[in-house]
Image 1: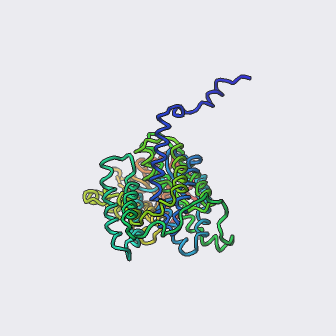
Image 2: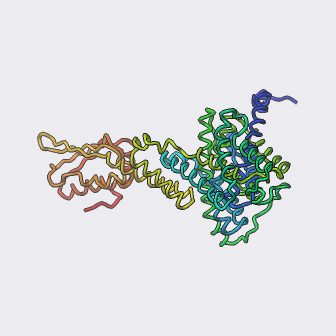
Image 3: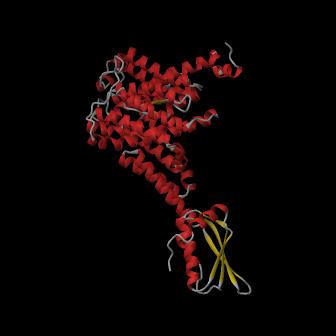
Length: 498
């Protein structure tokens, strides 16, 4: 039995598989990310109003599943604050069963959206909306911590300040160990050693002591249940895809490699379905943990992502009793740092505010206000994108100009049209001609213009009809190929004013 050279090449493993240094990098990166995931997964569980074990197991299943089905190598997916903020109200109003059902349905939505190519739509979300999205997410995460700082023992406040100081100062010494983990360990040792009575993770619910059992959510499978969870599921699907695709794009730039955005969108859906079937709260890509994995630790493969989930499961099952003694003040400190690190401070710097156009500032501000008011990131992004489109349309509409050049012998008038002709600019096009005073022949030169839509064709037909009422002839010249094709297809088929 013989094998062809091509067949042998197809079985050849990637070069890094035989490199011990690469394996060490991937393993250590996975361990560091797993350690860093513990405090955030617990904090996001609190935001969603579920037991910490729900968020921890969700992070495990998300990371392990996405390491296989995702489209961006070395990117970390787990329970996130954005998803927790979206589905938290559903849990508080209807219970955990409805939350899990929403996670599974969100996964289905993401698979459908991924298959339809929703990843390509990300290029239509402008930067001003992205900035508003990031800033509003930071504000919501910060506001979610305030209940943990009211009606609590006085010792919570010095613990909070100490945790913040550690996370600011420790990275100046070394970045080998995540500063949030150092802060949590230090504050836990202080509270346990000194016997300080403050709220702890254990007060929020029992940590896992065994593996989760897969199963369907405990909800009635009725139309009423579907109508209840569907809006939250769609919002979660959109927010999750948006954060994941944004993170994938960032990793592409850092590693100078390309990712499969369609596969990533579908993979997020698969990971959420798996997570929901194990009773988890769902999630998406995590920018912070991904940066630890890719930028700080130097990971480049799916191994680090898989090991992050595997190590996290081990830490939960073996060290659960230890984790239960973590003071909530430590987690609040972590989330405050996450919110401050997430916020785009450059976007509110005086120099930036002076230079940016008023329209873009308005789009960012509206996005933030809508998200904070509704606590729904998807609604804010949609409203911000629609406003950005309106601002853009208004700006481009003013670039369409009509200039009349009379012929010296009075035999004709040439109108030169420049700019983009679409519904916003076409509405004023018909008012720029002297129908009564022009000679019998009028030439409309579109060499410096582009016809984008049916509204523009209808406007040109209206101009021709108005001149025809006066017995005058209109010649339209200079159409580029796409404009000519659109004009030929629609001219005379649309209603015009007479």
